[in-house]
Image (cartoon, rainbow, N blue to C red):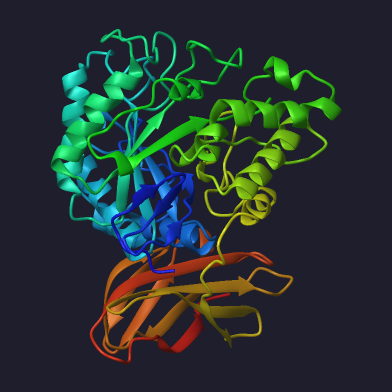
Length: 470
């Protein structure tokens, strides 16, 4: 569907301005909250290439973590600029990199939920201040972003603070520790400068009066909402968020039960811990983080993960999976360690909740007796398109070195990845990266570009693979 922004809440649902019910189905892509000050994996992949893949798999939103420290920094590391990759990010500051990620996500049809994951680049504080940062610093960071992206429609909201825990309270009335009150102060400050955003409030980890469960994950205790709901100046913008993990992160006592009891216990915990908020039509619920290495039903973690995905789908809850990145400790990611291929078991599990992925236009061209090429139109908008050339060695021996040529048509290419592009009008010649210039048996390399269209003849033509040596 075409989403009409801004989004609002209606009871337990999120709807767009046309009243269409919107289900958030997304991933966390971390990096801005680290001392790289940019999404991870750009040391291997092009940013647009990454976003195209996220959309292609069927997701519609990215929870984008950042640190307050990152926003005022002037430097970025961990981005590869060789062979045209990430060229548009060259010499940009962190906020300018964020600008591009958000704008390109919008062009790909992806929403962005910003997440204040840390204050500094290294630790998640218990409270919304500390580590050398004040509450004012935290709120100022949010109002800066709210103003900056006020007219960027695909930025849908603010996850105010990642993982409140430790000293954080809910409903205590203590100005120094009551997370519910701090969320109100910050949420209202954001809404005063940008009333379009959803305000996402996570739970805490400590106890609240009258709770039914004995323990919770960081950011996971929303039982305080029963007696002390968050009160915002714009009421139909509030979303509650919870984090939920399995035995692979920490073998909590509920995972020690016999397998026959675990599922019933998990469902009881989820209902008492957060699902009641949606059941009673109080507000929408977002599972802002969940993930684990195993989806095998023969493991306790796999049993938990499959059960939670089914629970999310049955109850039409919202989620952003942790994470897209493979370099996240006990959970790994949807991407494998090469940052290119996906963990198919995880994707197959999450695909049961996803929308039908966009269908790419694929044209197969047999170019040599060893190498085949597919031309894939990944994205095609009114004024812009992204094209992928997938070259495969279908022989049983190493292929000779090669290059690619094509006529781009009525376009201006402004982003490229995985190759060097040389314009010799009307032809473009592409030399692949060293890692793909001599393909092993069954090896696949993908070269891509995005371009602005200025005519009706915009698709690549006269595509050729040219062998250059043996």
